[in-house]
Image 1: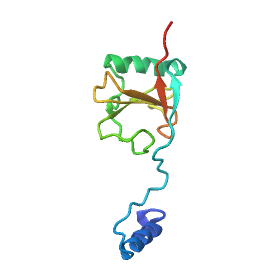
Image 2: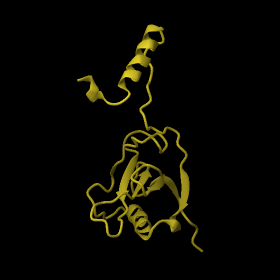
Image 3: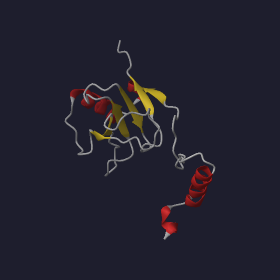
Image 4: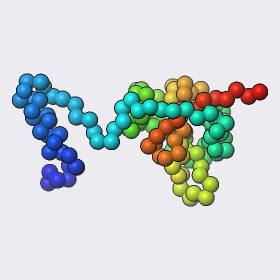
Length: 139
């Protein structure tokens, strides 16, 4: 039955037992694959694909959005984006031409007023990496 817990469970249990026996109390064991403090690069809004630029405009207009998940809370479980309270981030679909499903591209915006976000981030690999969207100055 313990084998269903997942890979590395023995090591995690051993670390906790050693810490408790040594009088250190409980310790945090970082999950495999997490990336706290990962560096987020930038992308100019003009460098986004056309569908991404259109989605940024819709976000600032408050919609309407095509998918039910658009505008839903993004949990930041990957811990790549800056740590914020639950409900701070919301996700939006960036449609991929020829893709029948929602695809892998998203814009995630942070802020407590969805139509006036503090910052937005673009991912084209389904949350494996993010780039902060920097608004370009139109001349």
